[in-house]
Amino acid sequence: MEQCEIFTGNSNPQLAKKICDYLELPPGKIEVAQFSDGEVSVKIEENVRGKDIFIVQSVCAPVNKSLVELLVMIDAAKRASAERITAVLPYYGYARQDWKERPRVPITAKLVANLITAAGANRVLTMDLHTPQIQGFFDIPLDHLFAAPVLIKYFQGLNLSNLVVVAPDVGSIKTARAFAKRLHASLAVVDKRRNSPDSVEVMHIIGEIKGKDVVIVDDLAATAGTLCEAACALKKNGSRNIYASITHGVLSGNAIENIANSSLKKLIITDTIPLPKEKELKKIEVLSVASLLGEAIRCIHLEKSVSSLFI
Image (cartoon, rainbow, N blue to C red; front, side, top):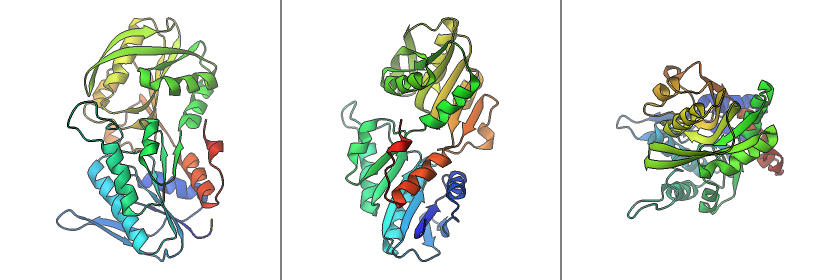
């Protein structure tokens, strides 16, 4: 891993450190601060000329600050004559606005892709995009990883009997099917109607879940409204233990209250987004994806295929 450096902003330094530990590399020396008026200030404190640079930054709360930090770090590396710059986004923010579902609204997932490219990134490494077609928004190479290997290993260790994997909506069926195949489980789908961006009503459950342990699979949970409504419907229809497997624990608004009062036995998330102490619950367990991201970084640096990390 010679001529390879890993830098991080302020959004997820814990995950960046775990990645560095996995790769047995020291974290790159960088100062990411603010001027008195709130503007982002970045200074790379070592020579990166001709090096392969990886910038780890989740676009999570505070979202706009995290995004600008990422863009400014990329620009700083480019102007310092880095040979190649890879933006490592464990969580790709603004991904939920990926099409015009009504008139006169933006497609911010595409805008963010344009910004990252314009800042000077040569490639992107990310995980569990909200919709796969966001890969096509980039004109630079993008490697899209899945947290599924880490999450599936956890559920395999529970040795659950009569397990059913549940897709909380139609858009999650493909991911849920992949989980079900690996866990040798059956599949069920929650049919829902969305009343607002953060409110849903469960209509029907397609599949046999009565008397069975279930795992709800989705890419992210923001207010956790969809998740908790699905869990409530599953409980009413006779499910036993209800688990949820979520890659990105956004957990905004009243999410923690919703989860605490829900029918969920356990919510499993990853550390693509850091979980603040004030949001910690006994129901929430965090798994690390540092080894997955670290191995992908190793493969990219050594010009090897990352396909072995996919499911």
